[in-house]
Length: 347
Image (cartoon, rainbow, N blue to C red; front, top):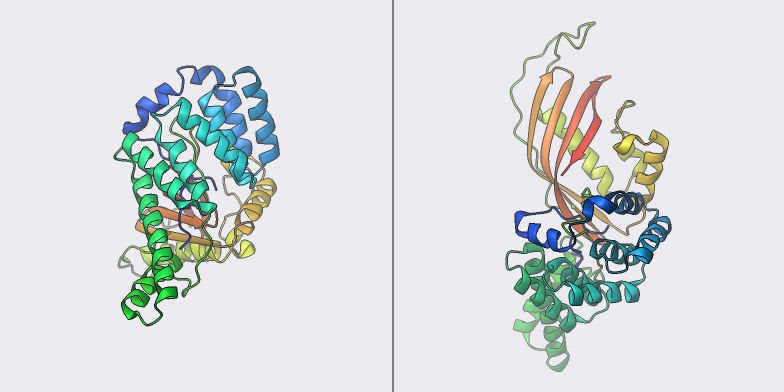
């Protein structure tokens, strides 16, 4: 399992605003509407992977408002994605000083410290995040990961001093398995993820438990009619979920060609961009991480007719530089006997 990869929400963690953080959003500045367009433009470029352009736009904005918390936070995310950890740490550290009431900068700072093996600093930052917002679940989980990593180091040191200590060997194996999380003992290096604070809204890029499909409903065979819209074919939840699970598996295996094959010709691309531009962005985003794991849980399927279905589920996304979770809706259409994705919605 890639530990410490939950940037305040992944690749930079996307964070669902909660009521508990509304006060933080207000503290980030009541002038959100006045500069929303500039921030949103930069954030859109960031989500599309155009980091240099996004950074240029953010820097242009900060030239006029150097203390703006939202722009500074976004800059920290961009620098992190570019691999400029040192500068990103400076950004988030300064935000914790100027806005000590916000938990997200502390969390992201901790992720970056952990990626450099500075676990004591990471622990201190997470403790501050929790002190600021005791209900901040991401910080609690990251803190648990920090303790696990520190324990692993301690057990490893103990074994170096006493190789015959079977109890320590067992404990170390348990923690190694926790870190591997299905990678058969391989311990990947810590990898940071990022997310935007509650006042800078972004659409989550999905994260990963086991794929779960809802129970199939009984269905009787029906003849194929010339007008599929008016004469529903035999369908079941199982048929639809088989496609959704295959789509998630293709994504997890980073098989871009197969992944894109699950989208209908009339798929509604985000923000109305061209299909070719969307596919190019997806190919880059899927191919860039060293590994990706997509999980689907709490799935439900409903049919508006024999050729249209709506699938709602909880999607988890874990990649080299991020972990995030979101509620997702897929509008499915049956074409040529196959279920395809016609539209995606996430929140």
